[in-house]
Amino acid sequence: MRLQILSDLHLETETFEATPAPGAELLVLAGDIDRHWEGLRQFAGWPVPVVFVAGNHEYDQRDVDQATIDLRTHCASLGIRMLQRDTAVLTDDQGRRIRLCGTVRWSDFNAFGPAGLDKALRAGSYFQRVMGATRFGQPFDAQAVRVLGLECRAWLDQVLGEPASGRWDKTVVITHFAPSLRSADPRYGKQPTTASFCNADDDLIPRADLWIHGHLHSRFDYLVERPGLRASRVVCQARGLEKKGEADGYDPLRVIEI
Image 1: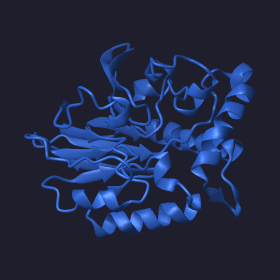
Image 2: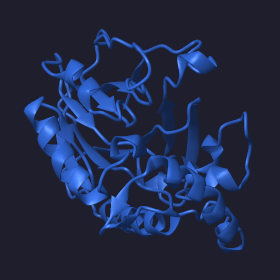
Image 3: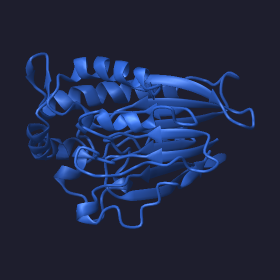
Image 4: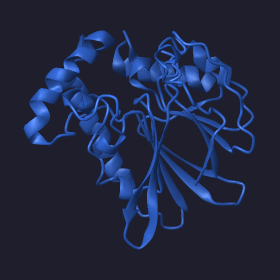
């Protein structure tokens, strides 16, 4: 299957008009498209199926649980399939069945292990204050994010442990948050705030053939070896902010094949 991947367009402040990539069979939106959700409308009537995993900014200033419900409804009205702890199996042009496993995969702040947890949580508190979201009537603070992050990881662990049993041929994971410190933004390196962007899901990556993520305003494409099988591939195709030069060299028509 040939995938066009877009993420971190930030249409609440950026101007960007998406164009279907020639030859693509599926469009993957990996989050932070538009905090106001209106930017999703440009993907209605897209010539190929569209799947969407929300980013953290899609939840800005909202109740997290209600936002998931409302965002699903909004996406459905546009013909977009939202995945939040959901799987879908699509058949490509070659007749192969591709399983998509999608979740925001909020940070659990475990990127640096138990010794770095407290520092990571303190650093992450800044981003949550800016986000201004709530859950259960309380601020969606770093500890609350960690709770959801651990739930997302448990879900991924479960679905990636399921045997294919002839139901699918390839597995693609789509998350907004990165699955590894290998995706750390090179501008900032590995510091406590990095745990707000990257998780330590390196042990889960080999269970997928392709792992797509966003959130980092840097682009990545690397392999994770797995004995006896073709290496897993991790791809981030984030555009980022033009005003910061992050969109320089960005190719929105790039197609990834699984």
